[in-house]
Length: 556
Image (cartoon, rainbow, N blue to C red; front, side, top):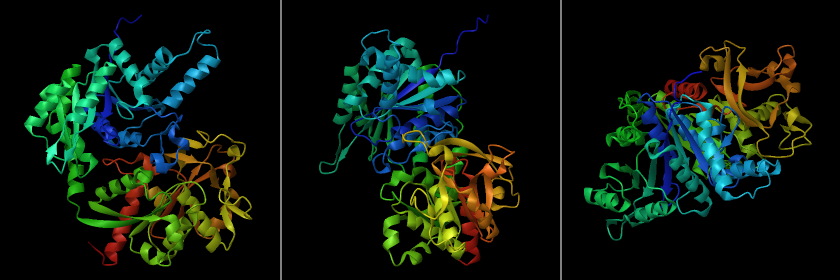
């Protein structure tokens, strides 16, 4: 029996005060990036106080995009920030909501696990939250640091059980192994010309009432904080002066880790947690930022979607476009088109033609779908580079069936159950599904790339098989495969569950035979893009679009 003591994982908790939307996710991801570049093994998770079991059934207008992990968890968009900054995957252990916590406790109560005892918020809910905090450590015993972001704002009633669980957890593992970073807004009152510290003081006071004392105060501000303001915050928030970290508004979120590093934040975290003081090498990150700040040219991308009015609804898509553009030393100018408005606009063709390429993202439901079909048709007919994602692929198939195969009433079964030509049909295993949450085809699936000469294969570097994430119910209807292929629609990515039954394989990626770049995928490749490792399909799209524009004599 081994006598080697178990490794002690260090914990960093990130809370927010004063107002919401301060950027706790960016702050958490930035801390993670710095520690990872010090050679530490880091993971990040988010605990969200809302009662939905997960964001899967939530309207994007309320909550932004739903981010999907490899293991099929439908999560908050902050996990996208975690993955993009750390360039490593999250999992279902990276996200817990009040709904999921309460559901687990209620299921245990129904199963008799509490032996007839009265079930209460303390200890049962708080114990389950502590189990959630320990889950990533159980999944990866080699972790050095786990960063846990607490959603919401200090003072919210629904967040109290989470903060109480953090207090208990800190007591159980010891203060030497836990750091609490509190992100607070420091407002500038323009009429008075003054920066005010009182809101931050009150949010720290709320924490102290709960029994939590912040080790670091992360100060979100429009204006630079002078020494007097920092001293005041240090005194009344009871944190060392050096632990008052200034987080000014940045031109890009990817500047935040370097802003922290300039204040030696990662070294102070390591010192506080008694971690090895290693050099934090950010040279690759700085090079990426140089590409962002000094583009050689620009590229214009049309984004045709359903939730355009809310910027966060396509967060991973716009980030993936930016990542790809930066890789080519370009600045992406994204023209956002609301689907319903585009359908009514007689000038829609002219407006889309202003772009160098078109991206059609995913979504659900009839509203705005025809605009996606219109965008796919224009790209197909005018040789404009095109990338379709999930519903974007389905729209491209509907266009091809209607206007190339001549099946005028072709449609997706999701949009029209009575269509005589359901070129997009409901997956067989989905037909009996009633519950909406967590029942789609979710997570990472392998995809074979059988055509070595295809644009798809070239984009992926000639690989035989790749893995992409999914979130959908309908799928390409194999009944129409031969007709489509004969007419020039190639199936360049396939999911083959049984090699002995190739006819049951699922179409994952399509492309047009005679087109500069017309590729669409049933997957969501945007979820796997990062600024230091852009996704191959987005990178290929931008590369072809820019080359075509140069050939046509265009330029910034």
